[in-house]
Length: 147
Length: 117
Image 1 (tube, one colour):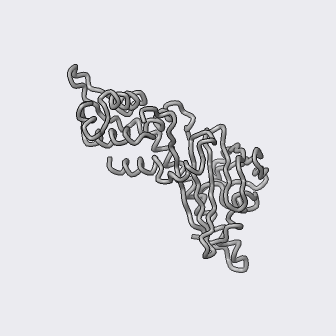
Image 2: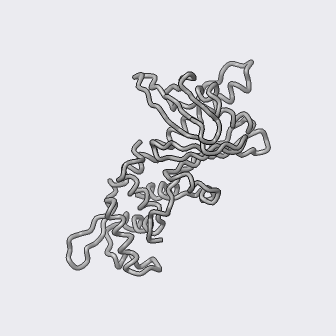
Image 3: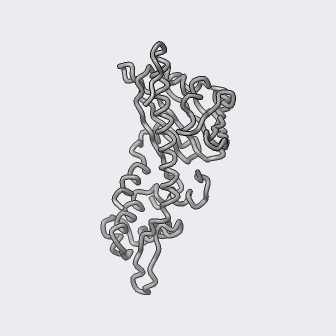
């Protein structure tokens, strides 16, 4: 309780998609899909600059290009775990970030995707850690609105 | 994105603890002494002092110079970097998911016109 070092700060983003789980899962791993959505607004991710080697230890690399300035932003990820069509975990060592994405079949043709982003080594992104989805940051964000 | 920033790491580590967040929430209402901060918690003054030192270390809390009480004060600007990182990550994934939803819509209805919001 008095030591901060063993605790975790996580960010969770959840979205429900009107598509079957297998398809949503493939969208997260296949360049021909990723190129359509990976860059945020105003940023493109050219298909020839996406390098995916979908296995533990394999590369997950992209180059995002700012549409207005041409500025490039390369990401260098490494897959940690791939369980089709349920779960993809990758780390970005440069950023000190681990992303764990979980794909949940809602049974009505829709799929819920949860991204758990944490600034922690991968060994901390256990199922137990993920169960704590009311993350510190969510509570912190709620606190911020009271300021 | 400055997640590897040492200062930001210290801020996140400080914020990860529920007692320390509660202390910050109390200080958001105004200055308080260590004794006042300890009141709602079932913790020793020594333990509360340790938490306050962590918050001081990352700049979230400052101590007054009054020799006797040294009240604690919230320094909300120290949160700026952490808030920025959280907001940036949320924005990135929100926009990504918006586009993925459109893409899924398009590829599942290939004979219709692409959907644009």
